[in-house]
Image (cartoon, rainbow, N blue to C red):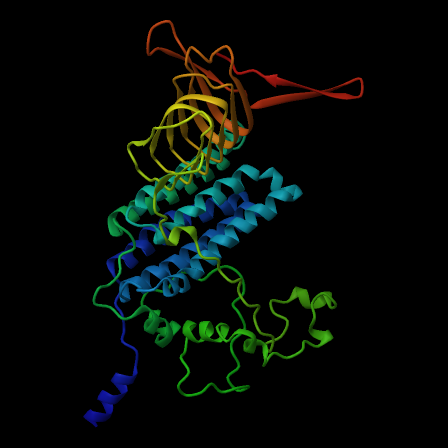
Length: 459
């Protein structure tokens, strides 16, 4: 009898106790800030409430990922990492897709600022793939969400306070997430150095083995159960998510056992079927969208090089001083993917462009053609010489300091921008006067034509 008992225990998966990181995520995020945000979203209803349910699913997926990390060693291959992150990537994609789709609808346009607040802030849950400083990353995403939340607050602060409370509740949720990450995952997602291999853990543990820390169920009906009577799997086949992934990896063979759907079961031909939660218990759930590898899963190396007449400056992060000298008048400088860095460009060059750079400061001499800033929020530009044209596109928050030489000659062209300020040099050295770039336009119909004028800022 003792030997039989020991054999049964050996075959059963080991029970994994909740880690402090799991408990804190459940109590501080899901049972705390998330519940408050979801409640405030339901009070508004419509697309706002639907969007909140997707954020709840995202938190559920992330709690499961934290539980896996608490039980496993850090993955040694990129392939395993991507597989583990795929539920979070899919949940993030649902949040983004909903925002894009709902914003185009008639009702969605009414809540465009609400949807953008959540759509921008959801990227904060990508911290699980950021090393070595995930907490500041969450803070940056919170700043992006705060920009749109401020618009919600401004629009409703005098008319409907519940929208103001809602905006603050979502920012509080990201703030709670940042505090959690800072405390339990300071240098990246914390793995268990004495834990299981993550690929083995995924294939050998069923959903019941994670019953110690069950996340709240996602909204909507559950998928139909697998009918084991139809087909029995081989004894050596793995169970759980690992089996699902192994079936996907079969390639074309994965469709060999699919059955043709009878016309009586097709919802587009039978509207009455759409009223139910599922068409049939025999119908297989739709396969999930194949996740795209996230750009957050690997950090690109910083690079500064001269390719012919083109300077390539890419992926500098937290660089205090990147110096580009030995420039010539026919050189162009292209900045891409830099973050929280200072770039100095000496001499006179033909053109300068910055794309997808955030919190980047550029100190430059003179430019023959022009300076272009695209999708680069929170930038700072200081011009020491002359620049004929400054073009700013799809960018929020920026500061441009002009030199005395280019004040009377520069042209500034903006589109899809906000919070852009131009600082003009004062009488005394180092003294500047800040001038905002107008953001609002007014259009009226005069004689059958549309006449548009700028709504000037006061001050």
